[in-house]
Every structure is written in structure tokens, then in C-alpha cells.
Length: 221
Image 1: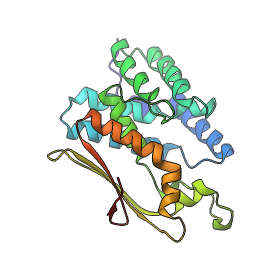
Image 2: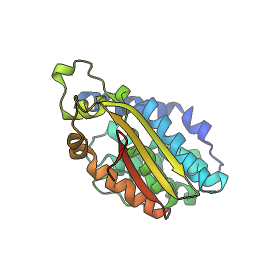
Image 3: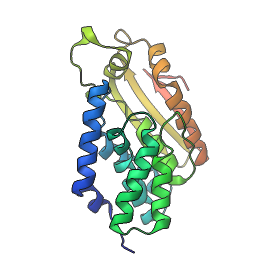
Image 4: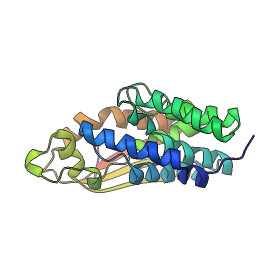
């Protein structure tokens, strides 16, 4: 069995192709950016969460790999993309020779990252959920014509600043957002993201931590 590193996955031509094609599909669906900026940030934050909680180096790297691969299923269809992506990752990692026990952790995390069916079944899965769902950025909006924004565009574009932080001593995870409330009322944010924030709370519970959402200086969750 081979020791597969994050750098190998990041530089793998097949993986890169699937990420690019997944984002092509997401653009056609009218969704926000799901390409290399998103998956790279997700990989970084997922790894950082486990590192901050003191998990071993390999567990941290598995979270990094899961974060980078988590959205490849979108190249098949947005519906059930978490499960499709898990099966695709299984094929890729098996072909590379990764041990089954490591593959199992990664595909379980990928298969459990979408709020429609996700459960934080492991440390890798919980870290992936938190990293993915807290990536709220104006730069992810493709449409630059505010007059034609739908609610998804408006909610994401209204976010002027976004910061995710983890206080391991107090076991508090915080997503701190600054929102242009004239462009998007806070209630619109909740209409789109409530399910994701509830899932973040469940993922934080896995680490015996609290999840807080702060919008424009006010604690709302």
C-alpha cells in the first residue's frame, strides 16, 4: 500500500480535471464558484481544525485530502453529489494504492458533507463540514450584475468580510460575518444558510465545542 500525500492529490491530473469539470457544471446550474479557490480553502481549514485540536499528522492530512476532493461529484450532477464524489474518490485513491482504512475515512467524510444528508461521522467528516460550510465569500459569486441577482447571489455578494476562527482553550468555533444589510437582510441569509449553520453546530458538537455565528457584531447563533 502507498502513502499518498496531499501534494500528490493536489497535483494529480485526473483530480484537477474533475474539479474543473465540476465547476463548469456548477456554473451551468447558476451556482457560486466551486473550483480550486473553494476546495483549496476547504482543505486548509479542515486540516487546521484537526491540527488545532491536536490530531496526529496523518489525520490532519486525510482531512486535507478530503477537503480538496469533496466536490468532484458535481461533475456528475449536483443531486447526491456528496455520494457521487465519495465513489469517485474511492476509485481514484484505490488506483493510487492508498490503504483501505484511510480511503474509508476520506470517502465517509465526502459522503457526509452535504446538509441534505450529512452526519459528522468522524473527525475528518466534522472538520470537512465546518470548513466547507463556513466558506462564504463575495468572490464566489460569478454574476457581477447586481440587478439580475437571485437570492443566492445576493446573500453571498452581501458578505463584505468573513472569518472563521477556533478557540481550542474555550472550545468555541466562530463564523464572523460582516454583511451589507441593504443588499441582503439578515433574514435572507438565514433562509439560504440555516441548514448549513445547524450542520456546523452538529459538527462542532463532535469536538465537544460550541459553534457561534456573529453577523455585523451581533451573536445570532
